Image (tube, rainbow, N blue to C red):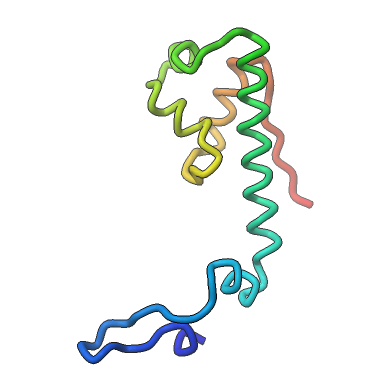
Amino acid sequence: MAGAREKEAENGEKRHRGPTLDGFLEEEGVLAETQAKAIRTEVIVWQLGEAMRQRGLSKSGLARLMHTSRTQVDRVLDPDNGNVTLETLQRAAAVVGRRVEVQLV
């Protein structure tokens, strides 16, 4: 399938051509799963932000209580950042009186 999406340039480098990211994910059969993960991440970030607001807790305050930097809290609260670990989310949730639940369905 790589041949359908890539074409070798004259200098031997491969160049991308073909579908959009959504089209590629759909072609690979993982579009719905990928979209669901993105939505779950957005929901978790929103819930964490709401819990912070309810407690009158700023990003700097959350960072202080988590013993981390404000930059790390910014990453935690960024729904587009896929590199936040479950451990970090659990620590942030604990600070605001919540917990993270993970399920296999």
